[in-house]
Image (cartoon, rainbow, N blue to C red):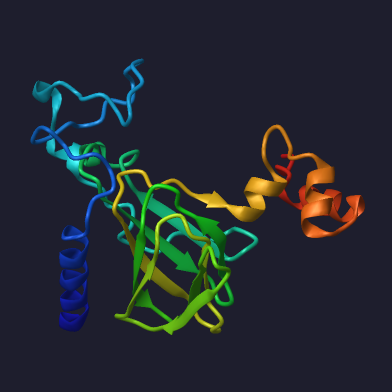
Amino acid sequence: MAAFLSYLALFAALSSVAISYDPDSLQDICVANPSSGTKVNGFTCKPDANVTEADFFFNGIAKPGVINSTVGSLVTGANVEKIPGLNTQGVSLSRIDYAPQGLNPPHTHPRATEMIFVLEGELDVGFITTGNKLISKHVKIGEIFVFPRGLVHFQKNNEDKPASVISAFNSQLPGTQSLAMTLFASTPAVPDNVLTKAFQIGTKEVEKIKSRFAPKKP
């Protein structure tokens, strides 16, 4: 337990000194007010008189989540949408849980660099540079790996036991674009002739893939 707390303290320290990508705050706090109709680059501020400790608290990543996805992973965000007090602070976290053989599919975060800290299990992780080079590593409990901002990356649990990580981002809302979902489940849909030419496959294959990403009827 002591070793785990030491690792977590180190992880928090590393996260706190990360260069923020979001704009710097010009005030102590600007607790997000999502109900405001005003649109800005972020959220408008809640009146200071209405701010409470609850705006800075979240316990949603304390325990593993229930994994029911077809890829075998679950991402639980701890960003400004869950913690209003993160507005203008330029940081956020996520917890990712992986079932045995689970995958966090190839995706990007357009607004942030990501750094993972392995809580449990072992993972094969990697990212691809714009020069099409794969940078990959096998990581274990207590180890850290960094995914540069905007680059496609993934995490795969190749073990027969669960795994989990905590991810830190230098953005209050890093955004996520999963390649498969973005290309095969967008609304409106990406034209089939774009996908057939890009992936060098036939229309039937494209429609088959799209059907697997279509929302399931109740």
